[in-house]
Amino acid sequence: LVSSCANYYQANYSFNKEFEQGNLNDALASLHANSTEAKGKREFLFNVNTGLVLSMLGRYAESNEYFEKAFLFGEDYRINYVNEAASFLTNPNITTYKGEDHEHLMLLYYKALNFLKMGKTSEALVECRRLNIRLQQLSDRYSDENKFQRDAFIHTLMGIIYETDKDYNNAFIAYRNAAEIYDEDYQRLFQIAMPEQLKIDILRTAWLSGLNEDFDFFKNKFEMPEYRYESHEGGELIFFWHNGLSPIKAEWGINFAINRSGNFIYFNNNDLQISFPFSLEGYNEQDKNGLSNLDFFRVALQRYIERPTYYSNATISIEGNKIDLQLLEDVNKIAFKSLQQRMNLELSKALIRLALKKVTEHQVRQEDKVLGSVLGMINTITEKADTRNWQTLPHSIYYSRIPLALGKNKVTLELGGASGNSNRSEFIYEVSQGQILFHTFSSLESGYPNYGY
Image 1 (cartoon, rainbow, N blue to C red):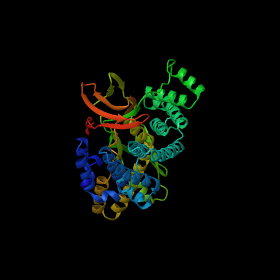
Image 2 (image 1 turned 90 degrees about the vertical axis):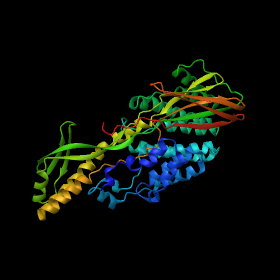
Image 3 (image 1 turned 60 degrees about the horizontal axis):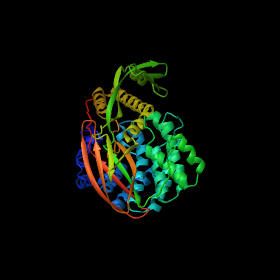
Image 4 (image 1 turned 45 degrees about the vertical axis):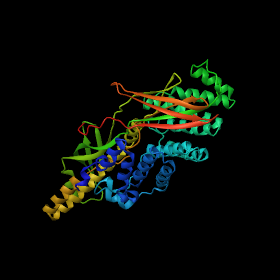
């Protein structure tokens, strides 16, 4: 009961602190100090956190072993109905955490990127096909156009993988799908515009695929009449910037009043204009009266708290040319949207949970008032929200393609923020003709959440 007072972030503070400070080996040791996590109710989070830290350490093969475990967990996940039933008498933390929709997409992103960094394009294509299946499942699950059901970032990644394999036709299709989603979904849902880099990617792959009509169409649509594809001596660098940290889940409460009408009681919150019915069918008259006499109580729900980014922009400099890194995915906004989409379901389950607790409490009070009071206290203490989520993901992801000359290239990354925050890093890349290199840079600095807000 004492440990249940902390949310998931606070309960894993040692790991989170080491990770946020960039002490990755210490973070990994802290994560693995509790071996029961690997097969417990937080198995998914154990595997994706381990996979992400190992990837940042450059241990890509080991990283993918854990990401594969997380993927198979999602594939094999089955609801444990005993735990589900028990959660209605305690709280949802008793169930196994299955992962959010976007978290299952992100683990495949990291896995594919690990393969690309190792030069294993064929293996990356396998992850590309898995991503396509995940996207189809997401689209089938949500038919409402106001819900997050298509991921432009993942389609862009698929295009990059196909292009690395020199499958320019499929790369063009993936890039075109991404552009459509940016225009139709991302702009409306997240206020994210299509990256300029993606426009160039579409034109380049249309040209390389011999799709002249599509090439001319998109040149006109993007208002880029001067664009010409030109090959160059050397290779390319695809640079991903992982900026900040994703939101954490915390707990918040909604106060409800009770009204009874016939065989239903209604949970009402006038401020939020929410009213949920709960059927009293099957309960005896004493239990009905006990429930209808409730006046006021609190329901615990989960919510996301954003960790604001420390940096807001980044540029790559090479041979005097500056290239902006462009926003590709806002993981923070997608997390908020995913929770918003199922909030009615979460609220319904929370109210059913509370109603069942109150019925049990009332039945016990009929037999023993003291024991009923103790049960009431336990019910209050165990009323907790599920605050588990993958908290080591980035807040947002930026990217760009940088042409590299044959041999060694010196590249400078400059980060900037609205408050004058800045950082500068230099990298050396050696490339052969036609080679595509992949690099990720993670900025773990972020604004800490204010738990009182």
